[in-house]
Image 1 (cartoon, rainbow, N blue to C red):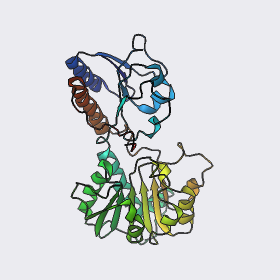
Image 2: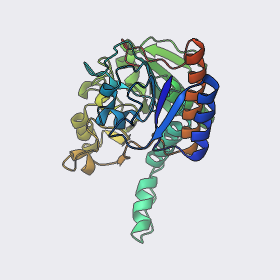
Image 3: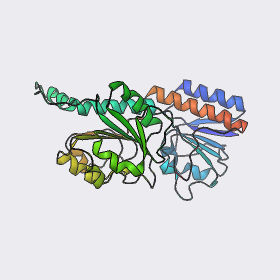
Image 4: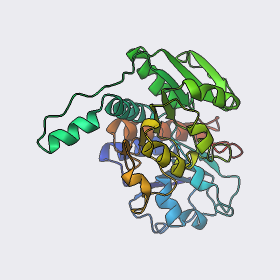
Length: 324
C-alpha cells in the first residue's frame, strides 16, 4: 500500500502523526509539497491525502490509475465531480467534515457582531482619526436566526449562537431532519419561502450541488425583512450576487458577510467590492489557517487510514449522488 501526501500545510508534528499511522498499517509513505508532479516510484499510489485544489490543478489524479481512496482536506468536494477525472471511477472520496466547525463558527459569530454592532463603521472612523457618531445597533439577543445547512458547520455555529439568547434558531436542510437538539425548529428547504420573512440573520453553510445552485435568488432575497443580515460561508454559487448587490445598495438589507463567491478570487471588476455594508473575506473562514483545523484534519485522516486498512467502514465518505 502506497500513500502520497501533499503536505504544504503540515508541520513536522503532523507528519509524525501520519507516519505513525502509516507504520501501523505497513504502508509506504511519501510527503511532497510539489503538486505539479507525482514523485518517482509512487505512480501506483493507492491513497492520496492533501489539499484537493492543488491536486486537481496538476491533473495528478489522472496520473494515478491504482488510486482507491482520496482524502480531501476540505469539506466541500464539488470540484472533484468532473467526468473522467478518475481512471478508477470506484475511488472512495472522503472529506474533512468535522474539522472546520470551530473555525467557521467563530468566523460567523465575528462577522455577525461586526455588522450588527456597526464595528466596521467605528473602525473606519477611528482609522481616519475621527470620533464616530453614535448609531443604532442590533443584537444577537432576541434575534431570529435561520441556519441554512444544518451540517457540522451550521450546527457548531448554532450551539455557540445559543449563548447569545436569540429569540429562535431555525434549521433548514434538505431532509428537514437534524439530530442536533440546538435548533428550536427544523424544516426542509421546501419551507424556506415561509421562513425567510421572519429571518433577521440568515447563515448559509451549504455545499455546492444542483439543488443549492442559486437557492438564494432575487425573489428570496426580497422575502427577507428590511434590515436583515446574510452570512455565507458555504459556496458562492448559492447566491444571486447581482440581486444581493441591489438589495445592499437600496438599503433593504442591513449587511452581508461573504466568504465565498461564484468566482474566486473575486474579480476586481465585481460590483460587490463597492456594495454598501458588505464584509468580504477571501475564503478564509475555514481553510487550513487555524491550528485546530489542521490538527483535527490530520486526526480524521489517521483514524480513517486505520479503518481502511482493516476493511472497516470509513467516516466522512462522500455520497457521489448528493455531492457531500
